[in-house]
Length: 282
Ligand code: HEM
Image (cartoon, rainbow, N blue to C red; front, side, top):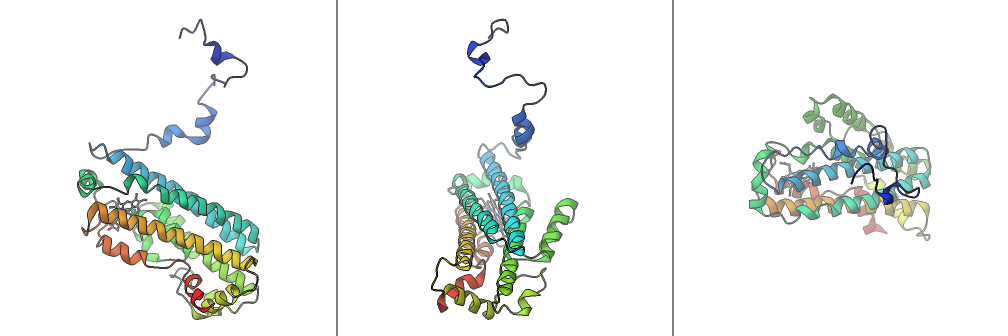
C-alpha cells in the first residue's frame, strides 16, 4: 500500500487509530513485546516451546491466584467477608483456567519429553517461588523452601515475608475465634512460620458450623468456598502427577526427588484439613 494513497478503510473516523508517537498504548500496558520474547529455548526440539510457554502461563496464573488469596486474607482480617468471598470466587475461575492449561502437556510420551528434558538441567517446578507462595497461603509453610532462593534477593525477601504472615486459613480461624467459636489459643497464636497442623478442636468447630439449619449461613458459604479452593488445588496436583507419570514413569525428577512417588505423597495432603474431616461428624 503506497503512503500517497492510504487505505480508506483504515483512515475513516470510525476505524482504530494507527498513529502513535512512541510504542502503542496496548504495548505500554500489556508489555506484550517483553512477554513474547521471554521464550529462550534450550533445545532444537519443536515440542519444547509449548512446554516452556505452558510453564510460564501457569506462573502467571499462580501470580493472579496469590493476588486474590492475599486480598481475601486481608479482607478476612478486617472482617470484610463479602470482599473475601469475591476474591475467593474469582480465584475459583482462575484455578479452573490454570487446571485447563495442563491440556497441551497432558499426553506427552516419554520419548517426546526426553527430546528436551536433558536441556532443563536441574530445573524443576519445585523451585517455583510463586507456587511456594500459594502453598504458604494455604498453610503449608516451611522455612527450608526458602533455601533454593538464596541467590535471588527479591524472590527470597518476598517468600520470607510470606513465611511469617498469617495464611488464608489462619485468618479464617482467627475470624471464627472472634465470632466466639472455640478455636484453641494454640491455634490462634501458633508459630506462623511452621506448617499448619490439623486440630480436633478446629474440626469440631467446622462440624458445628456445618450442622447449622441455615446452609446459606455466611460461615457455611465461606467454608464451602475454601473447600472449592482445596478441591481445585488437589486437582492441579493430581493432573500434574498424571502428566508426570505419563511423561517419565518412575524416573527421578530433574529437581532431584524420587519423581512420581514424591508427587504422590504431596498430592494426598488435604488443603484446609479440618474442612474435609469435619464432614464425618455432621
Ligand atoms: C509433563 C511435564 C512435567 C513433568 C514430567 C514434571 C515433573 C515434576 C517432578 C518429578 C517434580 C518433583 C520434583 C522434582 O524432582 O523435580 C515436579 C515438581 C513440581 N512441578 Fe512439575 N513437571 C511437569 C510440568 C510442570 C509444569 C508445566 C509446572 C508449572 C509450573 C510444574 C510445576 C511443578 C511444581 C510447582 C512442583 C513442586 C510441587 C510441590 O512442591 O509439591 N510442573 N514436577
